[in-house]
Amino acid sequence: MTITSKLHNQTVAAALLFQDKWGAKAVRIEAQDLGKEFTDHAWIGTDPEGLLYYNSRDDFEPQDERQGGKVSANYKVHKVVDGGDNYVNIKFWRDGDTEDQAFAEFIGKDTAALVDSYKMDGYSSTGDWVNLDISICTAFVRKISTENKITLTIDSLDGKTAVWNDNGTLDGVAVAVNGNLSFKKYSDLKTGLYAKYNNDHIVFYANDNVGTDFSAYVPYDDWPKHLGIQASNTQVFSGVTWST
Image 1 (tube, rainbow, N blue to C red):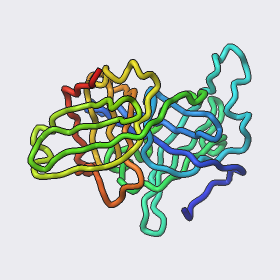
Image 2 (image 1 turned 120 degrees about the vertical axis):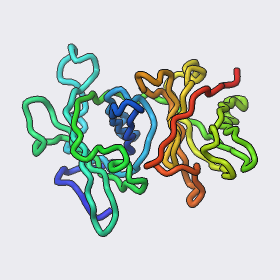
Image 3 (image 1 turned 180 degrees about the vertical axis):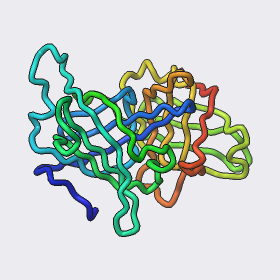
């Protein structure tokens, strides 16, 4: 990574850029070494991996008990092109400050061009930095070229599966990709009736009108294998069925 920040410290982090079918956008940052996550209702899941820059860990801690363990912040998403590569840059600052006074900044390579696909260059909103509290387990996504059924299997959860139909979107395509499934509550898995699907991730969520996601499957270490759909052609599949 050739672009950097003026902030003094850094830690490995990952971001989720999310957009539902109504065009509502969301951003999430996960910084495991800090034990912190930023959320504006996109609860879990990661897309671009990169670095979170900051001046002090104390900036992520509430200064008043009335804040309920949250540190509220404004943020803005930027697309940066450097050396022919796309990067996502997200700055975080407090009310009363300006973007130039950001206390945290995420920079990561945007290989799937999600900032462009979701039209998020220049997008800004608010959210909260809170303590990170998720579970992660390995998972496997499989689709046979002659079938329309897609299956996600989680061996470490007694072989629990999620199954849905691609509605012909992946006709003739075979998928066999390993990855990580992140979730906050095991009991919530069965409510993931929708799957937002592209090469970068599968996001499961309960309500297609709201689009708040609770669980995300993220491919890893399997390049050049992929899930068969570019981010610019992201599909939302309904009728996901989870085994008991």
